[in-house]
Image (cartoon, rainbow, N blue to C red; front, side, top):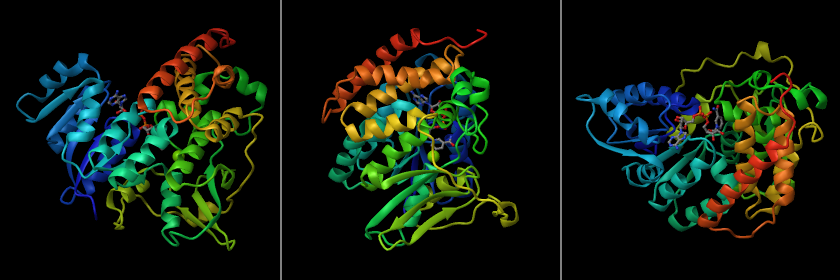
Length: 394
Ligand code: NAD
Ligand code: MG
């Protein structure tokens, strides 16, 4: 194992809690030195801090800091940071050789850059960091020589497959996609569907934002952009294949026509563990895959008509510059409005299309420019959502 000290950002979320499960298996080998969460679950953050005794702790919501201090009184001693600046600070200054970024949305980019800038390697769950600022992350990695290990299951799978022939030329990279809860729904059904139905993901249990993104296939679109930056492959070589069983986590095809796939249980603790223990392989707590239950592995093409978000992500990725950042900002707003029951699922793509139609792409944006584009995308999306059809029955 190469990494001995870890900072975990987003510790109370779906990825964060599963990372804690994995860390319990490697307590003697990996020390948790930094721990961070937003603050909606102070009780859990305090429990994690008491159990792992990190040297630095961060809570995003400054209003919850005194509650956290009270919960920790006499049971934890270290540096407590708060707010957005605190998130960037813990990422760069906790003495970790690996920073696992599992916050959600735009919030991942700045701490990821801070960690890399301070010479730390990163394990990335937060794909939005690469969507918004992939060119900045790639440049920072080249400057510091830090490593990036993908936690997202598809990219973790590809990372594993590529280790067989690291420098061999590729014909294609094939990202598998469950199809989500609307795989068999009509465009009309999706247009009026509410959040309860959107949140019924068939194969993965995840945080609410990524679950909505998985229903619109925006998640897969973001993963296409993520793959482009992680593995330096052109968009025309990245293909999405619907595979409802989610057993094949993704594949690579080399120029000689040979395809390597990575298979496993649909359990995020597997890619998390591989990122933490890389380049070693260690025993897992996940039960083995039962091949008798896998009689039917099926594959299909994604339908860009019913899932326009996927096409919009390819388009924004090809445009590059500020386009993916604006798409992400608009999507964050539209997803939140859908979760709040203010717009139907089909409204998300309407909002995205309206915002992207008004966006003049700027090339080579720096971090300050991206911050502004993020704000602009949010403002435009709020305007567009106000004109969107309301959810029937509300
Ligand atoms: P989640 O909503 O369950 O958890 C998000 C975490 O981030 C929480 O701990 C929250 O407190 C924290 N957070 C939010 N804002 C913060 C802030 N300002 N400062 C500090 N912490 C903050 O989300 P999740 O499902 O765990 O997903 C996390 C990321 O991983 C997302 O980018 C998602 O796309 C990606 N991902 C998730 C899964 C999955 O199975 N859940 C799979 C692949 C990729
Ligand atoms: Mg994924």
